[in-house]
Image 1 (tube, rainbow, N blue to C red):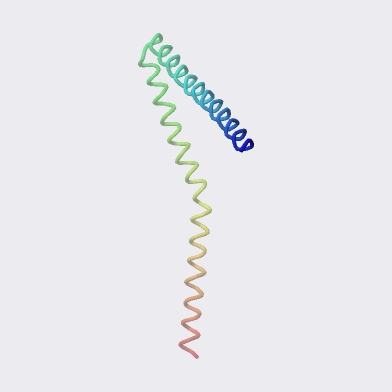
Image 2 (cartoon, rainbow, N blue to C red; image 1 turned 180 degrees about the horizontal axis):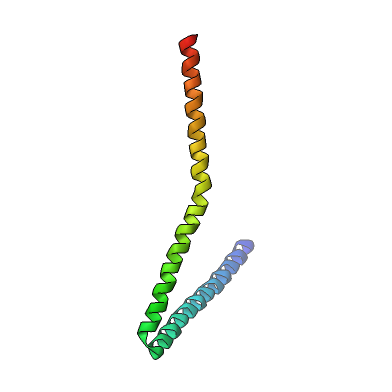
Length: 99
């Protein structure tokens, strides 16, 4: 029983540390958002939104480029597999019709 109580105490400590860490991370995210919004407001909101829209469009372009780059070899591989499959089927059909 002592070992189980010891392990339960360790688990409690680990969970408490994890909770504190998560709270700090969320607080840092909120502080960053608050700081960014207050900085954008002090400079005027329109330039901030213009820059944000520029970053969002650039991110969409990069995402599409990345997906296209990642999927091109997969599409080529699947099409090659289809060509091989059709060729083998036609050869099998020709062998059955002649045999």
